[in-house]
Image 1: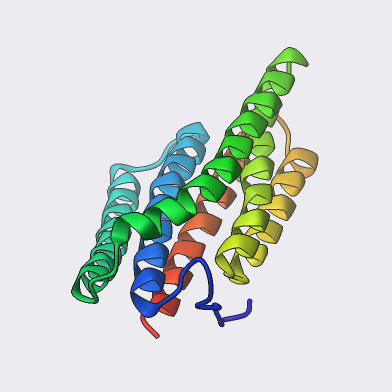
Image 2 (image 1 turned 90 degrees about the vertical axis):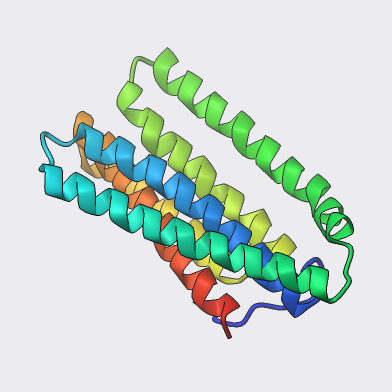
Length: 193
């Protein structure tokens, strides 16, 4: 993955970049937590210690991500930048991308259930989530999101075609959660440069 992130529009300055990547890491950490919980919940059994480790890692990643977002927000305030303007200039495009993602997720879930293949819900939604990283990569000038998109698309297609039954859900959900967490860690590392 390309480690450079263009600090051009819409992240016009270092403070906006730090805040934006911190916010992205919070979102990916949260959704990664949900995906991993879904996947682990399908597995026959995890020990109490494995569940505890999962929660500790999730909490630590969330705290680091939230801290980075707050650091960016403070820098925006310190530089006397209008945080509302920064958020509003991104709201419409990101809202449209997110709306497309939500509609796509609803459609693939409805299709999977309508075809009596509920095991395809997780890889179907994961495929849509992966695809939504493509316009995000273009809009935010974050080339690493193309890698996230590719990894999620490949992982979900592989889960749907390689595994059977509940293993499809487990494989897709765990892969999606892991990919989101790796991406969150990556953007946090980039935001510190």
